[in-house]
Amino acid sequence: MNAIRTLVVDDEPLARTNLLVLLRRDPEIEVVGECGSGVDAIRDIHRLTPDLLFLDVQMPGCDGFEVLERLGADAPRATVFVTAFDRYALKAFEVEALDYLLKPFDDARFLRTLARAKEQVRRSQPETRGLDRLIVRSAGRVSFLRTSEIDWIEAADYYACLHVAGRTHLLRRKMSDLERDLDPATFCRIHRSAIVNLHRVRELKLNAAGEYDVVLQDGKQLRLSRRYRDQVMKLTG
Image (cartoon, rainbow, N blue to C red; front, top):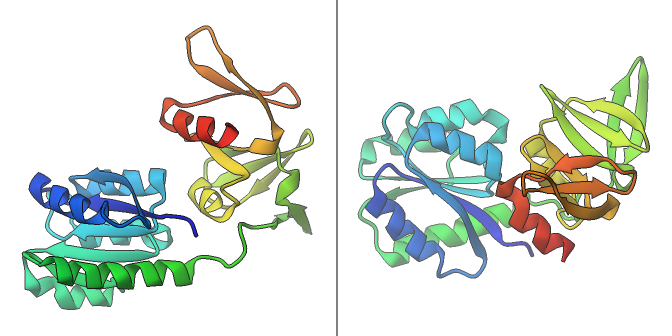
């Protein structure tokens, strides 16, 4: 099973540190990030696509409930509210939070919550390893496109542009959704606006700026962001 990607959001650095220490003891958890505000949380959730979110309620500018409201369907599979105030408990469950950790909590209470969170994430993960086809609608036609045929995917406003053997297909889906649903052993994000099929990658090439470009089998060159470089290097060996 894949590690459970986890993000910690709390405006108190000490509270974040305490959660991170507990989470990193569990080999099934991969902490993908931490941040101290609701605005940063929304940005990082879109960027990092965590499965599990530990979320403070009271934060300046944008509280935890606003974070979930703004995310909508892009919210992680499981959210645990962590706060020093018990008056938000009812509202937390109204927005379908998995649990409500009241500070200060002991290790035993945290471990019970974490066990429930892991179980929920596992249940919500698809049984198959990534989508094997996508449905593309255009000009009164419904096409079934095998994901293995895709060369790369490009963000295009509210759409994703699928590049397949020199042709393009527009799909009304977010890049974060596709990144989550496609086979992570085959498709890798290389930039905020690009996902590539690793089977189509010919080489990584240094450019004039000293950064890497991803070169596909057809010669297409795509910029590799520093943010995703380590992940690409790992997956390409």
